[in-house]
Image (cartoon, rainbow, N blue to C red; front, side, top):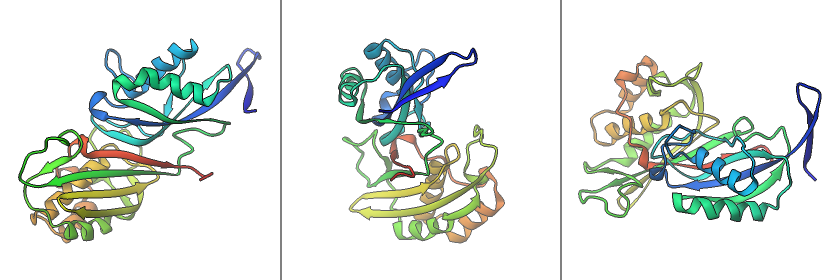
Length: 263
């Protein structure tokens, strides 16, 4: 039994159960992850669903705060309830509410603190999809970045390897980024091509705001032959956001996996 007992500031004993959830969502249906007044967000929708099922107002902590339009197939969250529920009952109940909004809970399990969806995460893996063709997108216009100009994905792959490792990514962070440090460590950055689809796989413990999308926008310039590997290295070393490429659109980005120690 995963019952947790704590004492509040008044010395009263409280008990609760912690639940970890796996979340999938269509980012075009939401104004990002984080709760906002009068806007549909993933966090807000899940919290409303939990309240409808349990009658409890809870805070759902997420592993990543995805922006408006960004999708997820492997987001992770957790929340606490003062009553024990069957994971299957919670999952079915949440999905009965969330399915109309373009979100789904694909896993529910009881866990114990100190597990925390955000702070316990050891890695986050994102995919970014580009469709490289002249014809417009019909089925995937909100699922991938449509780029008409031919892209040299091998040049993009070679350049991407320079971003792996521990660097100051000041050139690849949004002006709205609130992180205290621009130092991050990328452990994987691979770009694969199959027919007209390019898929970038990027992995790190954590990322700066818009870091992945700015890196992709910069590598697109390499793929188009407008910049080369030396240009990317200069951008990285100059630490100047204005020298990097445009921020790639959100709808090509997917949070696909969050790694934890027990895995």
